[in-house]
Length: 264
Image (cartoon, rainbow, N blue to C red; front, side, top):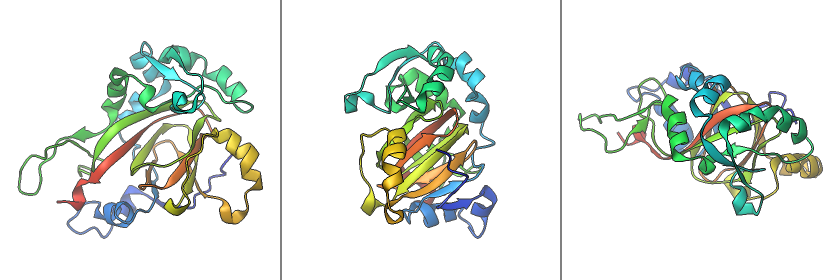
């Protein structure tokens, strides 16, 4: 299951993103990656966010433990005809060790996305730097934006999606609009397909790895990248992707509408 630290997409740091941007802070991120529909991982990009403390396991159990959510063997289990059940976050966290022990042989429960109540999601998202900005003419922007990098309004977020699960859980191959994924703690292995090769699969990602991956010729295998705590990965629109948690993992996924600093 281990990705071995491999990464087939661009790896950059915040300092590297700042270089050669002129008067457009982090314009390089927008133009080189967002507008070019090109994936990138920003190593340590969220390491200084307040969320890194809020999303630690002990903090989550204290702040969110009483909330209930739907869990199932993969995201949106009801859409795939899979069993789903309601549990409290604390109950789920207490069961993670036993889930992890079983997860390398069978699909186990995973918390992801819209199965999480809005109150829980909003509490979880408090650590994300989202606020209202003004444009260059001093006019307030109509919608809040994520302050992804050092005071720069980067994009307008859509629905945030929490992920929480032990090793071997994750998401099957799928695609959607452009998004970022922030890893609070743990590690995960990404599989990325260019839009022309993107697909939707109902097969759980662990099953995909054990039953299909070994028989794939090298020419048919996707790009890979290992994401670690504090990293931000940008997945462009319509790029196929799936993930498997290499360790117990928590974080947040955000699809977004557009990047602000390409419009200003």
